[in-house]
Length: 591
Image 1 (cartoon, one colour):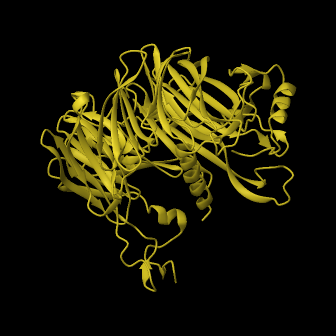
Image 2 (cartoon, rainbow, N blue to C red):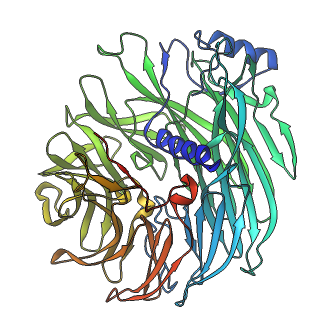
C-alpha cells in the first residue's frame, strides 16, 4: 500500500509538466538573460527580493517511426531524427524492456514470449521509472526517487505540518545487459528534483529536472549524486535571469555519457519550465510569463526561450529571447539550419496565433501574426520549409504556413469536422490523429497543393473512445513499408454505471491495439489486438510480429493477419499498486 503515494505523485507530476506551467509576473523592465551569481548571499537576496510573500511555494524532422531500412524492428517514435526520447518500452529486436513502477522487466520477444529477468532500481515505494534508453548492450534507466518528508511544502510559517512525498532526485542508472539474464549495474548518478524530460544523442543522455528553491526558510541547493555520495552545486555556479521578478524553482540540466561515465551540469534559478525541445546541437528551455496588469483584461502572455548549446557533456548558454504567447508542446518548436521557428497561441481573452522565426542567437528575424483569431493551436508539425498547423474552436482548420523565407505566410487552409492532436507525414499524405464527437479520429490529407488541400479519407471509432496517441507521440507506431498504423485504443461503455446498480470495481474500459491501413484508397481498419482487463499503452514490431504492451500483458500477433501467436502476463497491473482485487463490487456514484 505504500506504493500509492509514489504512483499518484508521479502521475500528477507528469500531468502538470505536460499541460501546465507556473506563471510568473513581469513588467520586462530589465533585459532578460542568464548570468551567474557572485556569491551565495547574492543568490539568497535575489530569491528574497522575488519571493512575493509566498516564500517557498513549490511550484524528428520526421517521426523516427519505422525501423531503419533493414533493421527489422521498430524504434521509439521521436520528434527529431538522431535525438532519442525516453519511453517505457524499448527493444533491440531480441528483448523487450518494459518499465513498471520501480522495476524494468526484461522479456524475450519470441514467440514464445518468456520472462528473462527483472531490474529493481529501488524499493517500490521510493521510485518510479520515467524512461528507458537502449544503446547497444547498455540499458539506461531514468527514474525519480522519492522520500517522505515531514513539513509543509509551501510557506515556512504555515501552522499545520504533515508528512508528504516529494521527488528528492532523478537518477540515471546504466546497466550492462549483454547477458539479459544477469544485468549488471555499471554506474549511477543523479541530480535534485523531479523529471521534466530527457533526451539522448549518441551516448550522451540529457536530463532536465526541477525542484523548489525553498526548504522551510532556507535555500535548497541542487545536489549531484554519484557512487553513494552527493555534492551541492555552488551558488557561484547557479545562473539566473535578472529580468525575472519571481522565481520558484531550480531548473537543473545533467548530461551523462553512458559509455564513459563523464558528466556535466548546469543549474538556473527560474520559474517552472513549460516546454523543452531538443535538436542535435542544442536544448531549448521555455518558461511562461504574464506581463503586469489585470490578468483578465488584455494582459500579455509571453514565453522566454533559452538556447543551450550541447556537445557531449559540455553545455553552454548561447541565446535568450521572448516571444508573445505560449507554445503548445515540443512540436511547436523546430530548429532548421540557422533558424529556430516557434508557433504560439497568444492573448486572453482575445486569442490568436503566431509564428516566429529567430536566428540561433535567438534574435527575431521574422514573424506572422493574427492566424486563426479566436482559436487555439491543437497540433503543429514543422517539416522542411512548411509548418502544418491545426487550430480548433468548433471546426478544425488545417493551415499550411510557408517558411521558405524569414517572413512566414499562410499558403492554404482546410476546414473539416473534429480536430487533430498529432500530425505526421506518411506515404499516402499528411496523417492526423485526433477526435470527432467524443471519439478517436484518424484523418488522411492531400497537401500536395496547399491552395487546394483535401481530406482524402477519415476513420472515426464508433462510440466513445480515446487514445494515448492523441497526446503522446511515442504511442504512435507507423510502418512505412506496408502503410500500417497502430495506436492504443480505449473504448468506454458506461452501461451499468448509475442508479442503485452495483458495478465491478475497479472499472476497466475495453482496450486494444487498433491496426489501420493507410494508402491511396484512404484509411481502413485491419483489426484490433484486444487486451482483457488491461490498458494497452505501446506497440512495436520485430520482423512480421506485432507486439502490444499493456500494463499487465504482452501479446505477439502476426503483423499481417493479427492472429495471436503468444501472450505473457508480466504484472498484476494497477491492482498491485492500489491493493484492489478486480472482483470487488461496490456501489456506484450516486448511491
